[in-house]
Amino acid sequence: MAKKDGGLRFQPSGGSRAAAVPVGKKQKLVIERLANDGRGIAFHEGRTWFVSGALPGEHIEARVLGAHAKVVEARTERLLTASSERRPEPCVHAKICGGCSLQHMPHSQQLELKQRLLSEQLSRLANLQPKQWVAPLIGPELGYRRRARIAVRWNQKARQLDVGFRAQASQDIIAISQCPVLVQPLQPILHGLPAVLRSLHKPQAIGHVELFNGNSSALLVRHTAPLSEADQQLLADFCAQQQAQLWLQGEAAPAPYTAQTLSYPLPDYGLDLAYQPGDFVQVNPQVNAAMVRQALQWLAPQADERVLDLFCGLGNFALPLAQQVRELVAVEGVVEMVERARQNAQSNGISNAHFFQADLSKPLAQASWAQGGFAAVLLDPPRDGAFEVVKQIASLGAQRLVYVSCNPTTLARDSAELVAQGYQLERAGILDMFPQTAHVEAMALFVKAS
Image 1: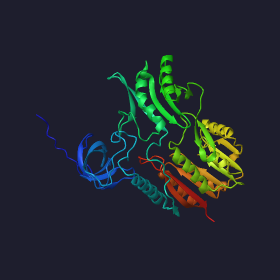
Image 2 (image 1 turned 120 degrees about the vertical axis):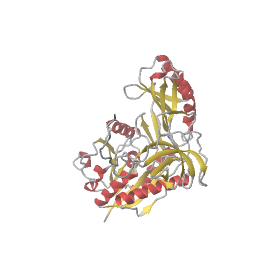
Image 3 (image 1 turned 60 degrees about the vertical axis):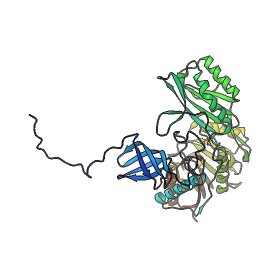
Image 4 (image 1 turned 90 degrees about the vertical axis):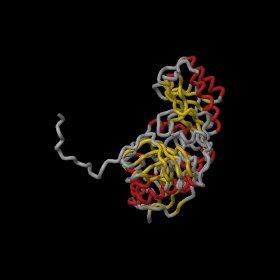
């Protein structure tokens, strides 16, 4: 005879627990507004739904990608009532590929979304707005991306190599033969790549592949096991047909199959910057060129000034700046990039730029290169921002500072600190480095208060 349960029953705090929302479940929703990342927001049975591929006012059927607590992440599965603002996606893979999330949205609305995010972050996190909002820096909506990483995975069940881009919110690989956001010289390489990789004698050895374009195109093949001479030759022949360089990477750093150099131009300044696969290079050449021009216009360097470039990379800002000032000091945390920048200065005939490696989370004023101060500073930090640096900026004596950011959240945080250091936010604006995505880059000008 079963024992009766005479104990007390306790209900969880906060009421009864709502049933879990299973992955794959379909749900009809009405989209009320957009989140900062461009996803539509809907509310249903006490939960907030974030739905990719949806616009305000639309009635949709969504498929659940994941859920936790009161938040559900989903994608648009079917349009029941479409917004008048919706446009056909330029790419046939847009609904499933994880690369572009805003192709269904007119470009003007994409810019408004990014502008709103920057403004909200500055207001919410720093209680700031610039004295002047500057028009967005824009380039082509499509055909702008000069670098792409191609996912590769050996499909044991099908006994073939899957080649393409990662699917949205998934590790699945979507086979793609064309990508409208890639620059035109990379399109035929992308189209022919799956066949040549699958023709290798040991395709299981391929880890991933990257495409590059600058003054020439290049293909980097990352392999997890040594490639036979025959497989290397197959790849070399393919690259020769595509007029592209071949780079290979095993356990060591990337190396060219034959001696060659990758580079990209900054035509406004007569510069050519060499780089290697793995180096950070802005993917959008048109917006990069406009960004460098605007940064120098805002910073207004003078011929008799000493200027500092922090997080200088391979010299994207440093070399143009050096052409306009008495002395340019450039600092970077990665040793290889410092050497690359130094070589770029030498090959471009620039002798007044001095490059240093330093941990930019440490005090700056005691560094030998910081002695003597600076009239102006340019910052281009990674997504984590430059909080430790901006806490020390005033000690360098700079009157003007241009901050180039790839993360509005850390820009807002650092802006508050710059204001505390005695600077005023004069101008700000977005840089549309990644059209068709919700990624926001921005530029801000700070001037020391009188």
